[in-house]
Length: 212
Image (cartoon, rainbow, N blue to C red; front, top):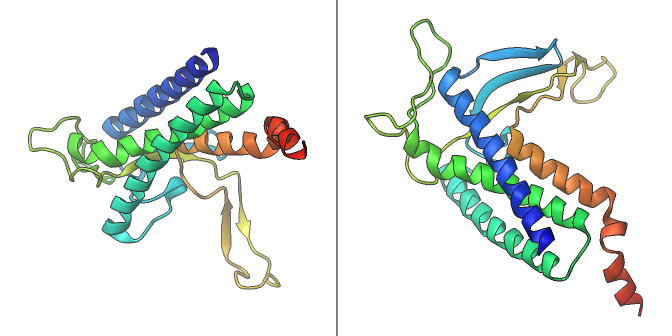
């Protein structure tokens, strides 16, 4: 099936780019270190998180395991869904969107599942600190499913202060867009946005059968 091959290719490309970028960041930068790419609008900023996409947290260590298991179940479900879509010869745009979501979810699962085993703890910025080491002699910093997700894309496009008349946050500073994320998060977001924007075109066949 040609569409299935396209989906597999997209997943592989996103996964490879995501992991190569993360491993480079992890082994070449210290926590909190950043480089300006596009003035004050775009930075490569190394941070790690224990939770969901865009640095969100979820119920401590138990939540971490639960989230990882949910991701694994979701990846299996999305993979099966893509196979069904290809078998039914559904719209290629829907297949590509699902493949992007699958690749993003899989990319962050790899961090959670294995990074704690294959890297030592990342050091914050200091004079004698060195970046994390791949496969350190002393072993990794955590156990299976307890690894931290590597984030690095930061777009503080707009910074300022809320006006004095603004409720709740009056006078407080704000940054848009504050969360730091990675390529896997971006892949999921793009896949979801494509489905939302083109849902009528993607699900036209299903609506037609319902009308009949």
